[in-house]
Length: 318
Image (cartoon, rainbow, N blue to C red; front, top):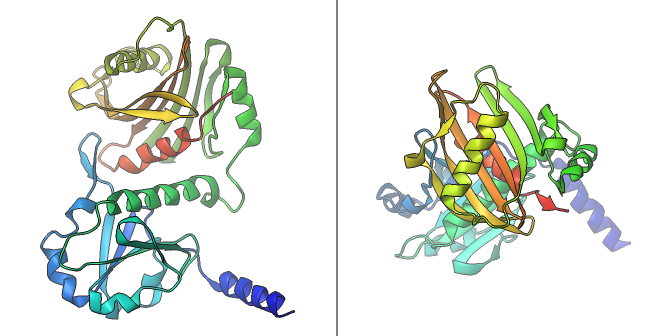
């Protein structure tokens, strides 16, 4: 009986919590007053991650409050990072657990869908693992937004996942993306999402065959992505990739290894340009191209590129 009452009390308290608030990439930095100079002197520089889109873009946005100011709705931010002096170590919430590198972490401490971290700064810098930990929290916020927060029901479409299996794989494309082109017999599918009047996202998948004798290199991956755009994208025969501003990194998705490209596309005929991210995955005799192209002139592109990465992470080779 006592256990049942405790469980009911816990569920009641949980139901009273509000959903976390603020930008998906927002980090609420809560600090001991003694650490103000540490912060002002660049102590958090390693957290200022940058992604090259058309221009360099900051990945995370930061707001600040000292321990005395950390009240009310500030406690409901999506990602909270507590920087504490040794004297204030007792301020670490009891629900946080210490992980590698001296980082304390926990979920849903003051709000639902919330990530809370704490670090004790004792004469040194922040743990080297912290940037990756914070970025992973941002990824999880983006995942929740894509697959849960657009509407009150799940954004996953099992029928859509099943339909893609005819191409030899599955991919969880959120319902917010409308089907733009379906030519499964030619191995090409494209979806689109228009967040506002000025912004357009194109999510494309292309299966290309006959590559058993071709090594997947950064240059070949770029040529494959360029050929896909010129063949299948609307009025894109002149599309090209800005090679000088494209980054490459190895990636694994759905058990396949490949190369991830992030860079700038241009169309001189229409004076258009934007950002893109592609994963070219090697399945032996065939390559899979997963691509998100962003057109959002004069505005941020990094959140949409990350949206593409989250979707691409759901790829599974059948």
